[in-house]
Length: 359
Image 1 (cartoon, rainbow, N blue to C red):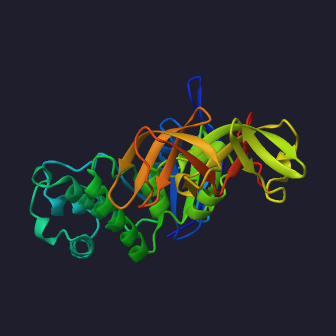
Image 2: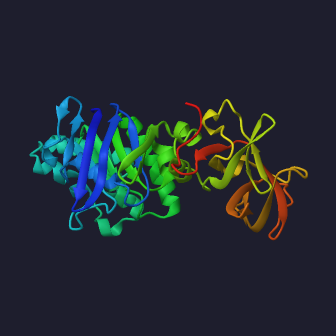
């Protein structure tokens, strides 16, 4: 396996600047996830790693090799596509062996590698079937098996679960992580699904408009987002955002808007301490306390979403959309107006969207 080092990648398609000076480091054996909305550049970055596109500026290294200008076949990578990309006229066994035959691998080694991959992925009973006789999840396992037999330095996954239903996505997601751990592989995985990103990654890279806005271990990025975009993208349901202005109330700093008054820890957010400064208060639904006596901001509840183990109230606070996770016994119903307190908040500059938390 090998580490990945990307430095200053730029890529344009005509007048569209898709990647803007992107730099990424993926340690040997790590599972990195590129996540972001459609059009952010994550798939383009993956294609540059694979050699399917060429960078306008910048460099790509796999281990100690500069592969920036190498053809895909010379990079020693294996790629799993969203569309499976299986040959419909070949059996599962033949699909797994196809790439090895092209490389003139000895028949005995081909057989051994196909056997190893099929045992890892539970494909033994399916080896003589054709792709049309397989489910979506089985086809994706074959696609992964074809990558495994390559024994490549780097595994690339291009939104491989997008065509699967919710239950299959959850199962194959576990399979992919187990496979990565078993192989000790270096993997780069692209998705727009932040749940996949949070559950799979050792290191997460959040892309927005062609730049990496933040990277790091998933829980660290989730807990300490550096921008409002990162905060909004990670988390389900998404973080709530409320406009406010800073007020100094006799030494107590408060972010206020209407009956919303959130006390701010001066040591945690020293950059926010300016009377009248426009800020955006962010709070995740699970950090909202509903109906704490008569104190707090007014929350007009439009609907209560019961999901079995937990429930969420949707409505508005200070005129902005708002979601709160409800405690099991919370007496909240559609049409109610209740009070909410915000336990753990984030503060962002209202203009730039940059976090005001101390470094």
